Length: 261
View 1 (cartoon, rainbow, N blue to C red):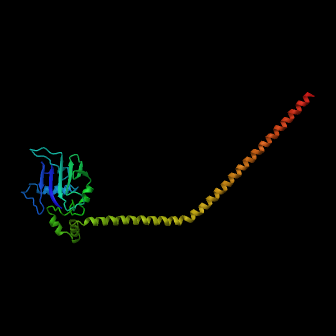
View 2 (tube, one colour):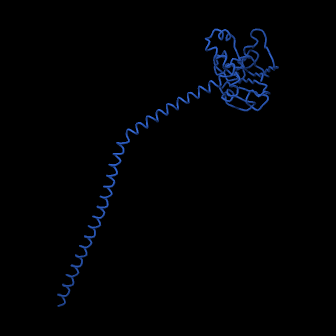
View 3 (cartoon, rainbow, N blue to C red):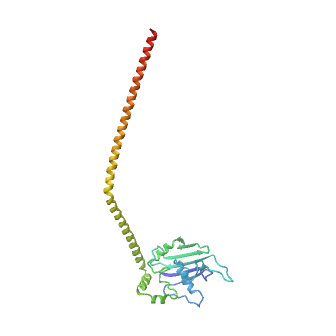
């Protein structure tokens, strides 16, 4: 894999479309002070996902858009595309040429492209994760960073070399796995505490359940008794009503006979 081309439109001092084409091997971009050499490095860092305007030597992300001059109007967007030759398929994608693009508008809208198709920043980060290339990778070293690297602590320097060698991917995955394991361990502890509490409450709950069952049994017996009592009372009332009706009919019959005699 090697850097094949960089296309810049409206990024910082590059008002018009500018394309840098590279061959395999060592390539240098030279020019006088103020010719835009550092802006090329900023463009590479930006297209690979840099989110800090300060690290791009700007106050806001919109400031990377060409601001205009006396002879040129400001542009409404900035675009950078970076192309890699991928014949060895070091990048895990089925293309011999891979172009990553990023575009930002003055409105603040931001988009990423992978071979011309919209994608997420996460997709680009994962594509370059184990290559040492990226906004945090030390394949791009800005001015002043060499002294910083040489003067840093050994453990910090080791981390820089790990990033450049492309093994930070595995360290980050290991860290994520350990965090997940710690979270699962905490969940297990909470479940264990819950089981202990349930076991502690088991006897009182069983006792309460027995009392509740007895109450329900007594309630059912009482309900059956009340129903039977109601039916018996109703039957007695009906019998009494029938007796009263028979007596009334008998008296009416006697009265009728007396009247006829």
